Image 1 (tube, one colour):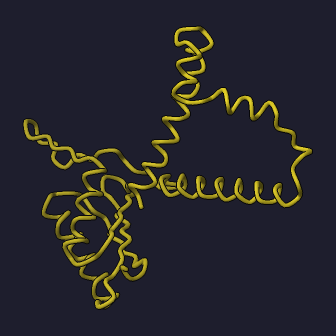
Image 2 (tube, one colour):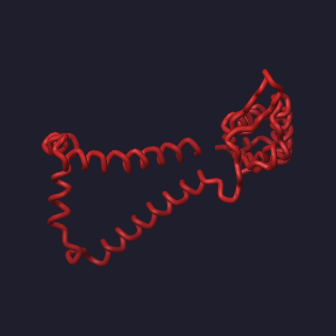
Length: 186
């Protein structure tokens, strides 16, 4: 789901950047309006909006538009909130070894990838990890799905132990690992 969130946010970000740029380029006649209309058909949309009158809408269609708008706003808000780390401070990278000539730094994305891979190695399905920083160490939060034939408690414990072991073997400073079972894998 994390990749899906990022894809939707990336598309939204590109639209928020591309549309104003195209409008400015069209307004300053850098790109002819006929070329833009040929690829986007924006003149038809402008004509429709010009002919549109809110008084022509029935009560039922107003209700449908309101419900659809509320659902789109709610989905966008949920996707955005899943990407934010509200209240959790996460360092972008952590120094693992500061010995002169052997300085080693690991990024937060690398730690997340290691944690997700370790959970998957323990038998979990669709793991997703998030991090919080505490002093010079990470607190790892991992959500997993359990195959229907497996025991929830045992798999969560195995995943936690494996994440601690893998991160420890790599020299990643970890304070704690929390594994949450989100349900069974379909």
